[in-house]
Image 1 (tube, rainbow, N blue to C red):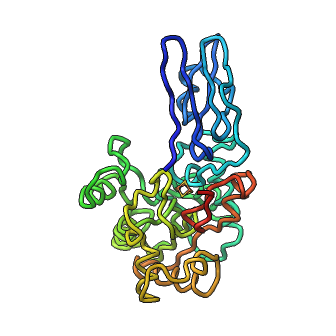
Image 2: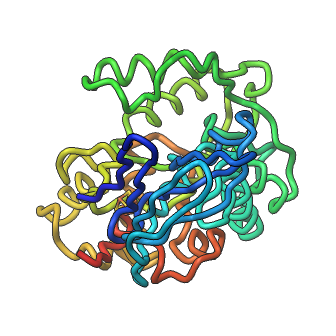
Image 3: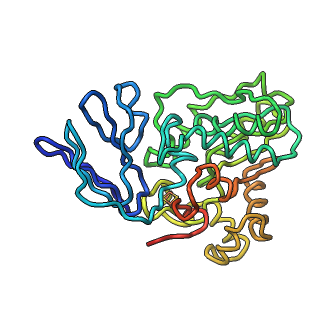
Length: 315
Ligand code: SF4
């Protein structure tokens, strides 16, 4: 696992970032006061500006009038790529890179290289929106809201502990726009496919609304290894991942040739993606590559954790 922490003392806060910096710890400042967060979206409306990003394993003591280093940062960083593609709130910045901008740029790059003929590009809201805007720009077709989120009062759909409740939340909060979808060929951008159950239901709804073609584009590569650091993908076992179930079907074992399956455009990768496409009932399916994600984040590959896509790890 991986853990950052804040300790509240009588007159200070001691902040410690996890060993490999998988999650951010950021100090904000206003008029002689300091605040600490992992999500910079907490700052603007409270009047704080970012003044310091802790490095991996760094420990600082923060008082109203200043910051004292208790332990220097380590050099090796493995910040979670999933923060940008899914978890982060769009206005947040980690290591100076804005979440929405990263999503836009990764969609832009994918859209430029996609020759599928469609009427418009849309998003599975909210986390697919930044990518879809970039995709639409890169591909040169309009962005329209084929699905709209009903209300932010529903929790995130992975949060409830039972699958039944997760599916209910996922269904209730997304409403397809029938008028826009009828007889149209549409690309939908989404953040990731974990189990695939939510997406399969959403896609069925889109076809039921009269969509002629539903093409799904995913902002990260296939999730092949469960997260052992943060449990961000919320999967408890390998077999909860749709990729592993497909590999089991194709190979008779869910853990065979994983590196080949993780290699974009290898024959095994293509067979896995095709099998997922078929299972979810999609017209076409494409995943982003690790290279495009890392390029869009703007940090060197060695500084970004991509374990759940390629199994790479420092631990
Ligand atoms: S394994 Fe995946 S979700 Fe976990 S820290 Fe690494 S990139 Fe993030």
